Length: 253
Image (cartoon, rainbow, N blue to C red; front, top):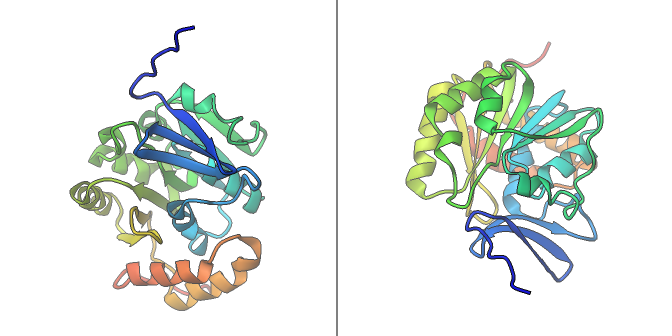
């Protein structure tokens, strides 16, 4: 029987040594799961993105653009039990693989929606507290998810005090361009930091208001570490360095 030729943009799975990975090409790893622990964040950039809990520990609604293998979706569902989570994925082939990555079925606090992420964001103003951007195609970071119009819409999609967290995996000039556009859309500035291995830049931007002080970030890291399978002290150190010079929110009364 003749095997069907795979489209260049068609995702596929690899399984080896107890891990399952999602690819769009042999050089483009999109997601990785350890079969014995599906909620573990195997890739360093996913752990870096979860630094948002140091700013917003208990968001009401987390929205993610780009499902991939669902690493962040599964982690948030397991470790943020009071949060609602919506993943927006444009590619039906990716959604069809959710079973292979142990992505749980939809319920009252977890949903996977097939839709164009940019269009969904435009249509849902003030709909979320945390917006995770991890949407890529076979060519990398698409212009539709990194334009000035898109980041402006992201700011409107967040509630006041909400947080944009973007994974920037692209050539350096594209990363710099994306960060400039985020700064134009968010008045509180942008904190950009490298993931542990340095291949991805994680950019955080906040809608309205300042950022927690360094002391508050380290305090939250200590308080939250029992609830998370993360090195939050290391995350706090990277975030403090990225936020140098950013406005600090007033201490709560």
